[in-house]
Amino acid sequence: ISANSKNVDSYHIRGHAYYELGNYELALKDFEAAIEQRPNDRHLLELRAKCYLQAIDVGAAFHDCETLWTPGAAYDARTKRRFVSMCFDVAYVSRAQDNATTALQALRLAREIQLSLAATETTEGDWYNLACTYALIASLVEDDGTTLSAAERDDHAGYADKAIECLGKAVVA
Image 1 (cartoon, one colour):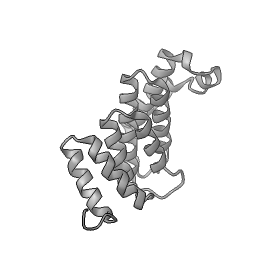
Image 2: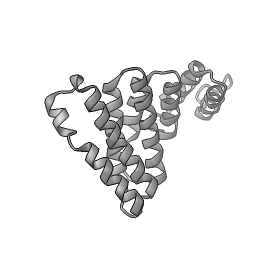
Image 3: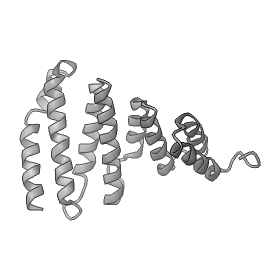
Image 4: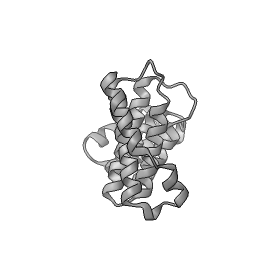
């Protein structure tokens, strides 16, 4: 890096090493330096989101999740599942921090991504994940309904039933 500060791969590799060593502050600096030079690099954004999660900055992690997902773009099923997993991670950490708003946003994004899987791509595990998403949204709305408007609560009515429906599809898949 000292020989060529514009070498994105050097920042990427060193940032990944810092991440693996648990030094999230230095990892974030390297990932951000790499992203400055390649702002549309989805892999770098994904690594930074994971790093933010480890540093317990769920707002920044969720922002990167939103940036990674472009509705209608061509993603393979594996990538979609990876994005869903990241959204779940953001939701769980957010909920542990009593941040129901970010948890709900992350779960809504996970649901959107899950619903974009083509019928031929959907596995038993995908149906279970979607069931969990609906159930978690339903429990957030029930447990923390005061943070939601009446329209938002109405929008999520019936999600417990949708969770059960998805479990039935998982058994059949």
